[in-house]
Image (tube, rainbow, N blue to C red; front, side, top):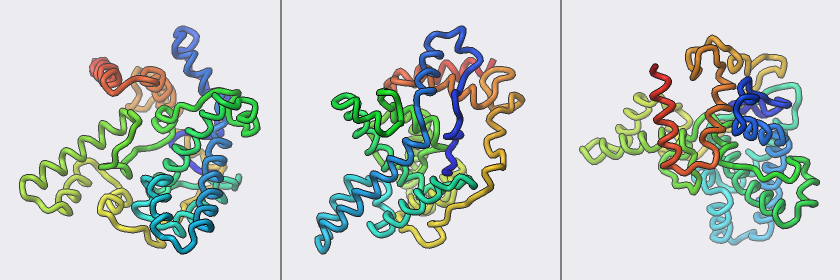
Length: 288
């Protein structure tokens, strides 16, 4: 099974405050309606199926294939060609279908998963609007559209693989970090620092992982980047999310998981300006 920032197999998630907060309960009701494991599987399978079809249909026409990759895989096509993307999708699906282990993704894989989910969610949501009966065949939600922006905020660790890449989604907490990194690098370059050196300084200041630095350096993926790191499914890799003594919680005694859901219900559906206002208030309260 693929390991994300939260356990995609968690059934009936809840928040201790939802009984006192109607908006939070509505948000948690929405979360309880999503079968995350099936969402990921169908997104990856859809991406693989249509990539293979396109490779076969456009055999010998590299320009058309390149155009398809740029449209269907706007993030991951920057560092992987069609054959590599196909290999990565197969590895992801095999890992996702393996119930005995958790498989951790590097940012090369997260970029590909982002592309696959983004494209599939658009198709799935349109199907719910135009053919709701057909949408039920996927078993993902009971005719409920997926909020892609919220899903990424909830289940991705960061979007460092998208630094410098434009997006139509708010992705507020991640984009806030990315814009700060982009601004830092830009200022350094404008002051005369070589881009590679500016990126190295940014990686140290913002703690950017090596795989993301490699992507930002416009380097292609190599064999060691295609590894998926696994651990037994019996290992409690999400146990820390339930630790109410963590210093990262928003309120005293609040675990990281509850904090994540609470933040999600506050940010869901907001514009960047609205989210900035909410986030500023959260930061203000957390200092008191």
